[in-house]
Image 1 (tube, chains in turn red, green, cyan, purple):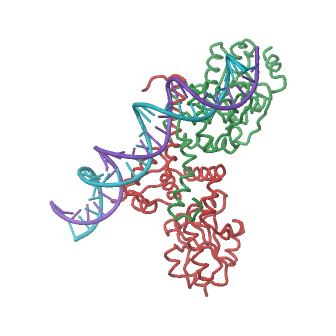
Image 2 (spheres, protein in one colour):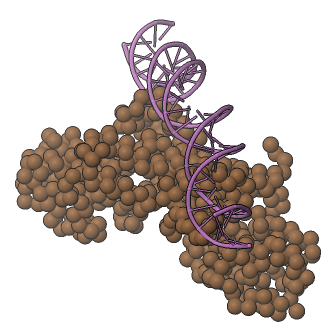
Image 3 (cartoon, helix red, strand yellow):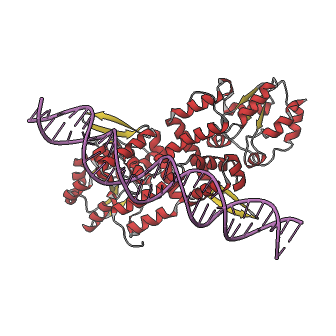
Length: 238
Length: 238
DNA sequence: GACATATTCAATCATTCGCTTGATTATTTG
DNA sequence: CAAATAATCAAGCGAATGATTGAATATGTC
C-alpha cells in the first residue's frame, strides 16, 4: 500500500479518487440533498422529510456524500446536523447545475412542462430588482423556511415562508408588484407562492435566481433577520 | 409523458437529469477519457491505447459520455473522432478536478507517493515563466503528442514529444534551465522528461500547470506550430 | 466486388447500487 | 433507570453497471 506505483496504477488511483466525487453526484436523491444543504445546515430527519425518503435511506445517502467529503456531520445533542464541508462545494454545485442546464435541453423542457405558464419567469434583471426594492416599488419575499432565510437572503427581502404567507395574505400591498423567490430552479415554493398571490388578485412574479445564483454574480447578500421585516411588511401593506 | 407532473415527479426528474452528468463522471476510466479529450480531439482507437482499455470498452464509455452530452462524435472517413461537446465542458472538468483535489487529501498523497522526489514542483510562477522564456533564460518544452500541442500550448514553448525528446537530447542547451509540462497533474509525460533530462545532467524542472490551468488563469495561449520551433531549439542549443 | 480497418452492437457475468425492513446504538427526558 | 427520540447498522433483494467476448456494420482500398 505504501510502495511506489507504476504509471497505470497511479492514473487509475488518481482518476479513481476523482470518481469518488462523481459517484457522490451520480444519484438524483444525493443531488437533492446537496442542493438543500447549499441553502442551510439541516438534521437528517428534516432532510428525509424534504426529500420524501425514509430515514435510513437518507442517512445512507448522507454518508456517501460525507465519504466524498462534500458534506460533514456534526453531533448536536441527539441530532446529527449535516452541512456542506466547505463553501467551495456550494459554488461547485452551482457550476454543476449550470453545466447540466447548458448541456441537457431536457431540463429546460421539464421546467416548461411543469410551469405550463410562461408568465412567471424572471421579472427583472437582478441588479434592477435590488434598486426597485429599495425604492419601495417592489416587495421581494423569501418564501423558504426561516432557517434558510437567516443563513443568507437577498437584501431587503421579507422572510415569509409559504405557511406564513397563507396566513398573512391580506397584509400584502395590492398596489405593488410582489416578487417571490426560493431555493432555485428545482424548488416549487415560489411557484406556489405566485399562484397563491395571483389567485388573490395580486401582481406577483417569480424570481428564478436563487441566493446561490445571486452570490455567484457577486451581488450582496444579507444574513440573519432583516431588522423589523414584519413592520416593513405592515407598512407597505397599509 | 407530456402531461403535467406533480411536485415530487418534477424534482425527481430534474435531479435525475443532473444525475446523468454525475453518472458520466462516476467512472475513473470515463474521467480519464474526458481529461484526454480536454487536450484535443481523438479517435476511439487512440483513446483506447492511451487509457489501456479494450476498443469495445472504450467505445461504450465514450457513448456514455456522449449520452450525457459532454462529448460528441463525428465520423471522419472510417474513423470516429470524439471531442468535447463544448468548451464549457473543459472548464467544468477543471473545476471538478480542483474541487476533488481540495476535498480529497488522498489525491495529494498519491501524487507525493508517485513522484517520490519533491524537487520537480512548480519551478516558477506562471507569469514569470512566460517572461523568462521570452528573455531566453528558460527553455519551455511541451512533451505532449504533437496534436495536443497544435490545439493549444504555452506561448514560446517548443513542441518536443517524449519520443522526439529522446532522439534530440544533445540539441538541448546545457547552460539553460529547462521546464517541461504536459497534460496536467495525472499525466506522467513531463515527469519522464525531467528524469531523462536530469540523467543527462541538464537542469530540468516540471511545470505542474496544464494548458487548461493556464487558460483558467486568463493567461494567453498559442495554437498551431510555433514558427520554426525546431530552429529556435537549434539556436538555443548552439 | 473482395478485403482490411475502425467502430459499434449484442450477449454474458460478476459486482455494485439503491432501497427496504428490522435491530442497535447514543442521547435526552421522565 | 426506563422510555422516547434520532440516527445508524446489517441483511437482503431486484436493478443497473463495467468489463469481456465475438459478431455485425460501415468505410475506404486494392
